[in-house]
Length: 320
Image (cartoon, rainbow, N blue to C red; front, side, top):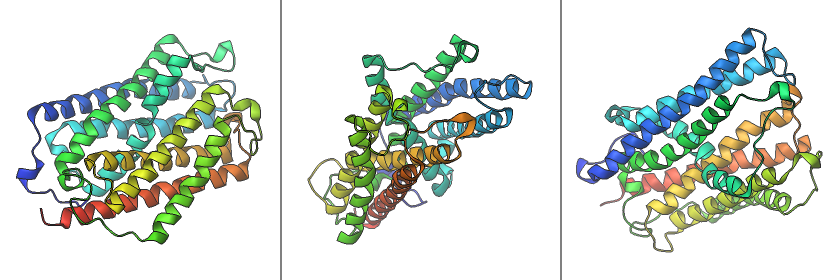
């Protein structure tokens, strides 16, 4: 994806799609604002001396300050997707933040639905004194779900409007970018290791787990969801780089973009938790396993995005 827009005649989408982009962007920003409000309240409360018993004041403030900053970026991203001036935002930061946000949230939609259907763990504090008020639970839930759905609606339309060559037509219409067998094999290997681990743990395996009790049914469902998205992303990259099978180009492009963002974003978030373990956090895996698992996931996400961008640039440069 280049930083310049394509000719106007290829950028246009129907008024209904534009309206969906606007609604999705504003909906995402509004929903995440509720989550942001809860996080600001938690930071203020911690500064006043009200901190969960399992965290020190410093750890709790730093953790929530980080999530406040992430939420602000998410709210701004939603506004960028909704507004016409969002098309003028420089491409590199827009792509990076959209990539990580989509990776964090869009793959969680099927997980949230499955978890609700199966009656997954609702969370909660370690004791009654740390239990969240009901309004906080509602705001956090709406924040995550609303931002995820809003991104899933608005982001594809925005990307289609700004970089149409990466989404228009069918796979194989243009000569695909050659990544080489070595790069593709390296990508498959990077994806295969965490996928095999996550699938094994989802099936009930315990090898590599230091704290087996932490890996409950909800955690296994989340790992299974992550493994599925990683496989889908690797397959999507193969489709766009090999030029077959024939299908609408936007399908593998969107899947690869979301999957690679998920591999990178969640691993980059979880790795510090597994190593630093703030507030007595207990990781299920051994530290060495976490380094391998998340390190390979981060590398796979970056390599997958690089392959997708190379393919998109080659399609953008090809004659229409």
